[in-house]
Image (cartoon, rainbow, N blue to C red; front, side):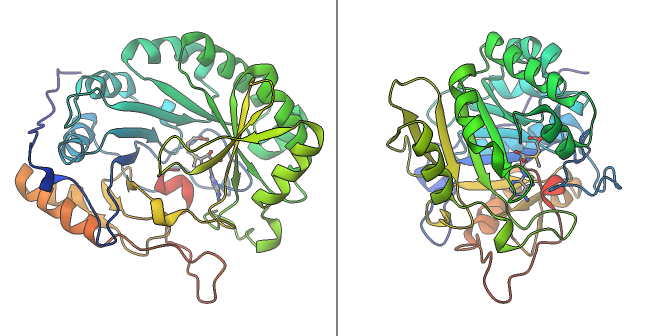
Amino acid sequence: MAAVSPTVVHSTSPHARLTDSHGRVIHDLRVSITDRCNYKCVYCRTGEHGAQYPELAIEEYLRLIGLFVSLGVTKVRLTGGEPLLRRGLFELIQELARLRTLTDEPLDLALTTNGHLLDTLASPLKAAGLHRVTVSMDAVDEPTFERITRVPGSFQKVLSGVRAARAAGLTPLKINCVLLRGFNDGQVEAFAHFARQEDVAVRFIEFMPLEEDRLWTPAIVVPLKEIVARIGRVLPLVELPPREASETARRFGFSDGKGEIGIIAPVTQAFCGACSRVRLTSDGKIRTCLFSQIEHDLYGRMREGASDAELRAYIHRTVQGKEARHHIGEPGFLKPSRSMVHIGG
Ligand code: SAM
């Protein structure tokens, strides 16, 4: 790939920072770089569709991400689909690792993956400049895991991937686990032991209505309170203070300090008031909330020839309109037109 030079113009004006009309500062950008995935997790994809949305060229992601960084974004998470499938990923990471925030720090550069390709890619990803990864694992029991991913052999691959990521220093290493009642909720206690054995932070995520199939009901969600109570019965937990106001997980440590669990409870304890995130889809649309009903075509404007200043103004206007909160479980709740795999989790 030809060398890319991100067109970042850093403004020193504090007024340039992204804030929404509710006073929230936006400093966290999640970027989907493909909506293709090599897993067919039962709660995410029907398994019938591949990519539905176009992907941008790596240079185009770089320009758009650079604009957000010039507006105060300090944290970029690459996601998908499965980001490790994306050609050009290493060049993208190398270039992102060179960007500086408004306070002249390196970006906090993370990636969320199903871990399937991580055993061989962890070291090169670290060498390219990636700081840390979050790996999705919805069971620590092999048959349950593979019933969810619907890919034979996936459990051992992901386990090796987790270990390779830790050995490569892609840390702190987090494991995301989405619990579904009657499917994998029996794994809660085993995950607590796994967090300690593997010295990783396991994050249980409440299941949100963002699947391709129509699975979601309030009854299938395993609530935060239940998870904490169940783990606390087998291993004493101590709640840890949040590291930053916008932290999505409530964190708990074990009394001897080894391993950690966290619970992300968007359904039963929504954290929208402290949300600091916006998303960019693989086709270059801004989504100001996972549950947005509208998308904002940043890439469309770029393709029409908009200047950086015009694109920054567009980003500012879009972020101003960020939703106050989501309405999961409320009467009249509408699922967004895209499911999680096509938005970028
Ligand atoms: N392929 C990557 C992976 O597996 O981590 C990145 C994309 S995946 C969509 C990102 C995260 O979203 C995963 O941790 C997945 O478990 C989570 N996820 C997917 N659908 C979800 C849903 N309906 N509710 C909560 N989390 C969900």
